[in-house]
Length: 66
Image 1 (cartoon, rainbow, N blue to C red):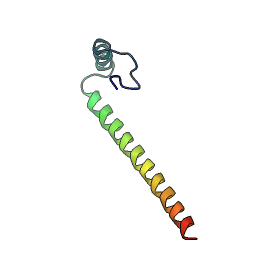
Image 2: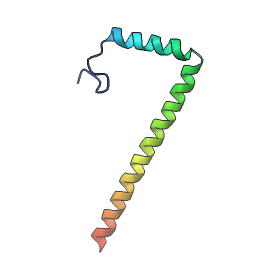
Image 3: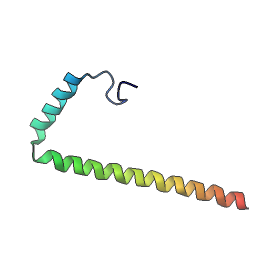
Image 4: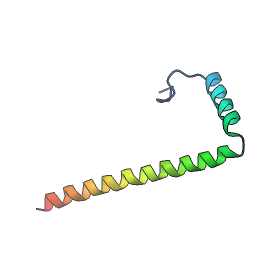
């Protein structure tokens, strides 16, 4: 899988241009804060998915016992 799913057919040049535009829009000081918030969001999403999976497993285990 050579391409990332959400990037499609973007090459290295296009990714660099996008990164420069983001840098110009948000500035160098704001980007770490944005990445920190994004990381917290991803972590929260993963925890939610794991909790749902555990709930499903517990429900199926309870139904198997009956």
